[in-house]
Length: 131
Length: 163
View 1 (cartoon, rainbow over the protein chains, first blue to last red):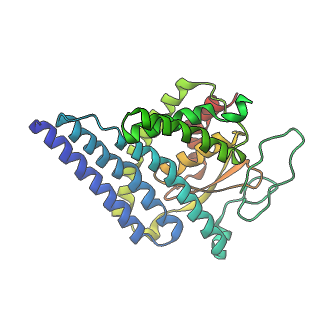
View 2 (view 1 turned 45 degrees about the vertical axis):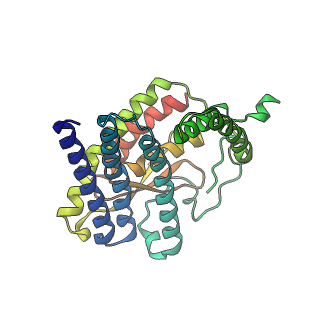
View 3 (view 1 turned 90 degrees about the vertical axis):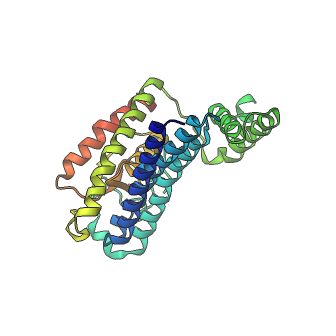
């Protein structure tokens, strides 16, 4: 393992740790739930991403094997993190009545799906969305 | 009959590949992956009746590159906001993104992308599936945020999944 490789791995871990810290700080510091929700979604993208790239680079430079599991972890995180955030946001909208006046209008005849039932199926068979 | 046995061929292939990557290659892992790849899509097919059509595979690469770049750039912006601004001073608000997309897969991808891109979180969909509720952490110009989302992400997703 070269010195340059060591420096690159260390730098990536520091970068990842920094963004994970900022994400957690945002979760603790920001005043209301919707703003707080921004913190963890940040941490999972660049923070975890940088740490995983550092892990891949380390095992690549140490001459063992090219380890692909990190890419899978990233993929799973990218698939699950938005779903979690969406569920938290929806629960918040349902539970906190005072938030409802802050919502922007849908621009449609119906309300947001957490408050309103989907309209009856159109005749041309457009894809219906479950709430 | 073949369509009933394997409702989503690409999903089956994906499950087999992911299973082999997770466990390292062996014929046992390949067989078990294939069994899972057949069973899982059949069990979940009730929740996923349509088969998405990918019209422009090359655009997916372009889309992934743009999203990754945006994530890195916007991460620094949000880190700055969290570290150096007081939470109460942030101009957070909900904005409405009217959707041109119609297929559920495309809308899900757009909503996921919006959440993963720092600074915005998608919160809900209108009951008829034609507009998306997005929460911005700090914006002074909601119209520009919406037009950015539409131009950068939605237009490319429309090329990938529809048209």
